[in-house]
Image 1 (cartoon, one colour):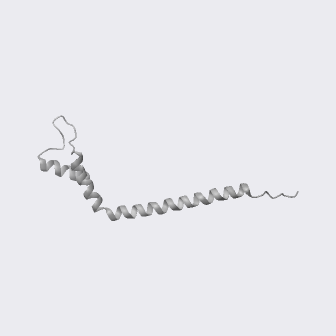
Image 2 (cartoon, rainbow, N blue to C red; image 1 turned 180 degrees about the vertical axis):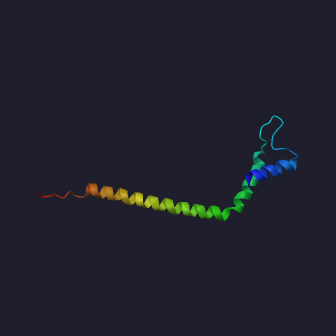
Image 3 (cartoon, rainbow, N blue to C red; image 1 turned 90 degrees about the horizontal axis):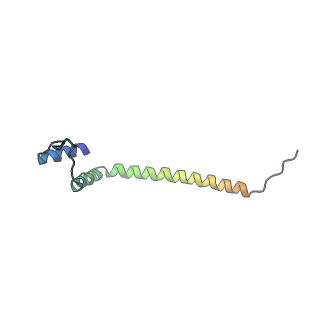
Length: 85
């Protein structure tokens, strides 16, 4: 989508994909901000679902890391049982 946006804006300005020196033509930051604003608006639901799933996964990982840490502390503090031989 980004490339299509750049191509359409350059075409509207009457410019090609390359500058006279052969470098790839680009748009300025303000013009790209228009693209990103539209892109984020269009993909809002997708980003929202991704973020929700990301937070769920990270919460689960953190929860299990906490359980392991607590178990290790508990095992260090718990008196050792003597085994009879």
